[in-house]
Length: 105
Image (cartoon, rainbow, N blue to C red; front, top):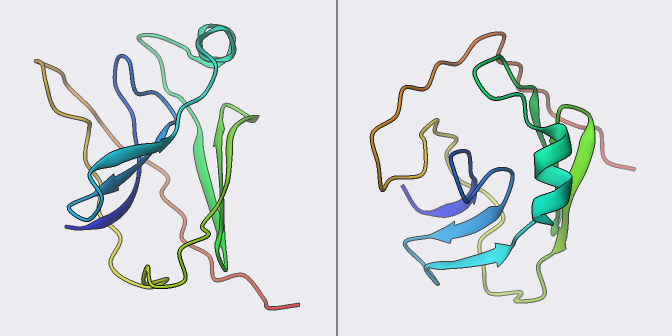
C-alpha cells in the first residue's frame, strides 16, 4: 500500500503518515489531546474525512488532524486498507466499518 495513512498505535494515535511515497508523518496530534481522547483497552471510534486535498482525522469525536495537501502532484485517489503502525507487539480489531462517498459541493 502507498498513500495517506491514518495511524493507530502507541506514539502514532490519530496521526497522518504518507506511506511509501514521502515516508514521513504529515501531521501529528498534540499528545495531551490523545491522552484525553484515547480509551486504552476499549473500542475507539476513528473517523477520517477526505475531501479533495483536505484530510481530517477524529478520535472518539475529537478532531486530531486537519491537513491540506499542497503538492498537486500527489494522487488524490487509491485504495483503502486497514492496518496498525508497526514497531511492536499488538492486537488490533476492527468493527462497524462504514465507507461513505461524500457529495461534492
